[in-house]
Amino acid sequence: MAQNNNEVAKVAINDIGTEEDFIKAVDSTIKNFDDGDLVEGTVVKIDHDEVLLDIGYKTEGVIPSRELSIKKDVDPDEVVKVGDTVEALVVTKEDKEGRLILSKKRAQYERAWGDIEKIKEADGVVEGTVIEAVKGGLIVDIGLRGFLPASLVEMRRVRDLSPYIGQKIEAKILELDKNRNNVVLSRRQYLEETQSEVRETFLSQLKKGQIREGVVSSIVNFGAFVDLGGVDGLIHVSELSWKHIDHPSEVVKVGDKVTVEVLDVDLDRERISLSLKATQEDPWQRFARTHVPGQIVKGKVTKIVQFGVFISVEDGIEGLVHISELANRHVENPETVVKPGETVFVKVIDVDLDRRRISLSLKQANDSVDPASEDFDPALYGMPAEYDEEGNYKYPEGFDPNTNEWLAGYEKQREEWESQYAAAHDLWEEHKEFVAKELEHAEESAAADGQGAKEEKVEEVSNYSSESTSNGTLADSDQLAALRDQLLGE
Image 1 (cartoon, rainbow, N blue to C red):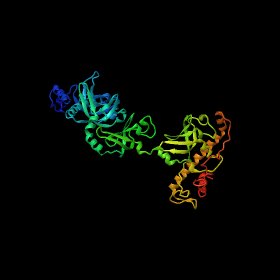
Image 2 (cartoon, one colour):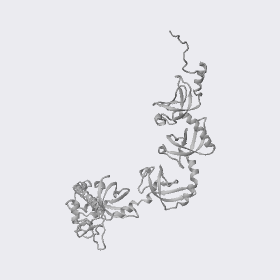
Image 3 (cartoon, rainbow, N blue to C red):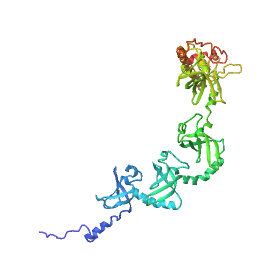
Image 4 (cartoon, rainbow, N blue to C red):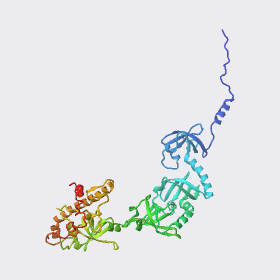
């Protein structure tokens, strides 16, 4: 029987030494740190309320979601990804549950303070993203939460701060107090320093009467500021529109591109006065250009006074129907003829552009059309018409009066002409319906005014009807008869 070998073959060599030496060797592989130290690790897991960070310690560190960013209520997945290398500050080496608690935002805070202190000493500029609009100003992420007062956001006071959220801005550091965790910034100071030379050059080149393009940068109660390219000018509320407005927001909004005229440049006070309405056609001039005496227009009753009725014929333009032009009878009370807010058809009697006054007639408009007639003159209802020196109608470009046909290649002119004709025809049809109703209620209206019924004489009053004006109207053109029939589907 073979003799047993009591010696066990060695499978490893103990090159460490004693058990105590082994424990020391293991401990040497674990990082040693204290509360408040900055450590670096790798993200190994992300949960909805915390992130696990491997920093080479015996256990993984935990970064609660509230300690991930200086922003509030952030999603951990939006801040870090698995595998990211992250710097964190040791908050608690071992809490009640034995966990290592870390903070990414406090590490960022500590690192940022050192950088910001150096920038402050050098009178430099910080750059950050606006993350919140709070009472009195903005919170800017510059590695820590910097406060930018509303009065220091622009060269002037800004009331609506919400458009700045998410924007990257540059600012100067006004106050820095680590003990109170207080950082106050000024973007206005930065703008003043960087734009002073540019502004001076720009202002010297800006002249009264120039037309400039710009973008509305902010809106205040008394007007709107326009960025002309690094320098802002003011459009006073009175220069925003030809019509009366209660607030600038009725006309423009922040971000709108506008064309303005320079009204004045004050070099001493560095102020620019602008006008938006000066670059737009005066609606009164446009009305005078597109409407002639004798034309029928539709309007709305805006005000009734003792001597007549005011009619809104276009946005911001009112004309007067004198009480004598309301009906074919003596009118004591205008409200027996029309009511506030009612839509009516009136004839333009006169346009006084200098005094900005329009004389209208409801009576003549009613007398100008027979509800039963098919005699239609589009020129009386707003369709542009030109005549030669002999009073003959000038046909639209591309229309052959000999064949009553449009020539090839003039499709656009034909489409425009037919659109104008159709619009005028629709207005004529509406007018006839209106006059028919007026005739139905004529007796009732007269009775309400304390008078007996009077016979309405429609045909004999009009000076602008197609029958009484045999020359110079579209209604009496034999050459266009076929075209009118085609448009009307006859």
